[in-house]
Image 1 (cartoon, rainbow, N blue to C red):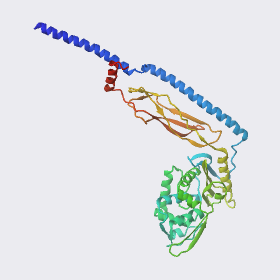
Image 2 (cartoon, one colour; image 1 turned 90 degrees about the horizontal axis):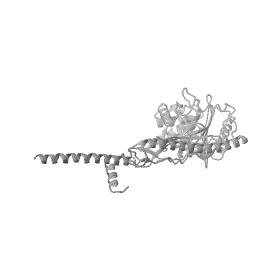
Image 3 (cartoon, rainbow, N blue to C red; image 1 turned 45 degrees about the horizontal axis):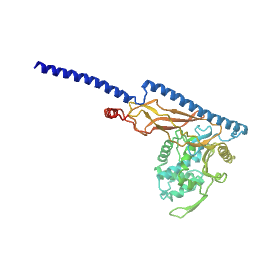
Image 4 (tube, helix red, strand yellow; image 1 turned 180 degrees about the horizontal axis):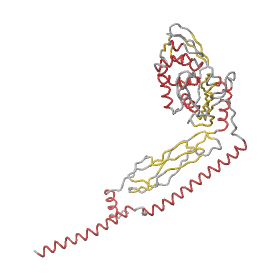
Length: 437
């Protein structure tokens, strides 16, 4: 009996020794799996730092090449004096790239100003987006009493909304603007709320509409920048362009058949190749105002001039607008500044794969002067923690123009990487035991 007990004890001790040895072996295999790249984490940190230094050197070399190229262009630009000094009469003026709303030039462009009938750009676009052109508008007594410029509509008359929009934009009739506002918004105040909501939606935070026609009123103001953004949005609407570019339009009151003919008062449409708009304006408080637009094969330019002279200097607004447009056409060229960069893989801690590949996609085509400097900054983490999903945003590329942030582009992961777990370790051990390494 004692002999049997001794055998059991010896067997137990033997099994314990074998288990300890096996655990050490498994631990060794596991460590081999964890470090199958041949790097310890400390080694990786060292290599990562070296890779980052090399990446910075490559980026510095790229930036140096860009800078040298720009310096050559800048010297040529200075020799030719291509960027001339603007000579404008307007109290506030601005030139904008209509494809991305980037400001190319401004003079008091952020100053709040009255804007007269350029207000009707917003009146028209809000109406187009919230009504049917076949709607019938009934004229109120209040609308019929608006001061000049008037269509001279009468209380109780009925008109198709489409016809009134031509009257609004071609000849800038103030009575028509109120009739439209009352129809679409229920009241002038209700329509003004709709206009202001649209302004906030477009990012025009320094604009406040009180009237639909732009007559001087306390609290009714905008900035050249905001007005350019509104115009940039409006000219993307085909119905808006169709109305504002029409030379003339004939229509009649629905019940009586009283006939009207309105003609386009925007002379700028015939002053420059590619001119497509937009709207004139004048009040005693605002002076002569104009929002213009030119569309050519490689660019769309939006110009705004506010307070560009007072009577009798009605032509200064055209001179200022042409000066702005010619500046944009002469000094700016379309360029692609997106860098299709190849990134070094990023280490993935506790990942079944040690490195994650990164990708970036973009298209940054915009108008630039030769003397404008482009700088790119990349923000990428030193490591990722498993698990990692593909197409996850883990960094960004920031594009600066003359040290001002222009846009940011996300940097993505490309592969799903799971976290190391026991099934993964078991598979690796089986491969080791079966001599598959």
